[in-house]
Image 1: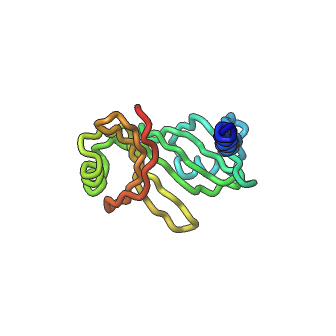
Image 2: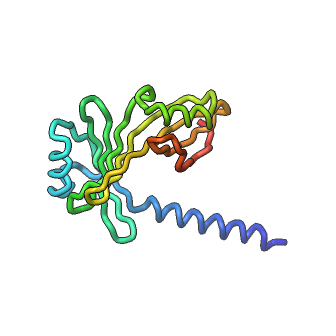
Image 3: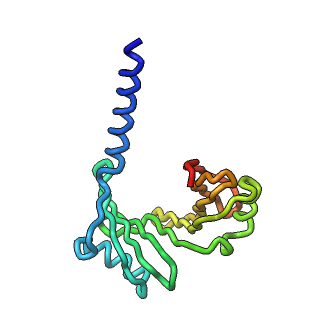
Length: 164
């Protein structure tokens, strides 16, 4: 029976190794250390924005940057390739500004839940853009969930479940 605790320890160590690999390559960087192509792309897309921070991430040999900024009073995160190609824009919005279909889907799935945060997620692939919504809800049982919802109100993904 001694093998059971060792097996559990092995599984736990394996999971910890995977988690540390997943997060180990994300580092906060100074804006002055971000490549010019990345900063130029962000400034071209958001000319009046105030850049507030940057994160560099290397995953599977590919380096990406996420630039945090404030534009017209809204928090925005822009993900880009190292050569300045924008791949995703996350714009924080007020819960009241969610489309009716999104609000209705969330209310139906999570009655009495409170919306803690809402964002418009714009994914960019070449000339093609697609929009979805990412909403953090806190359920009546105090569970915090991140829910991705299509503009039509289809729930695409749910993550979390931890107590808030």
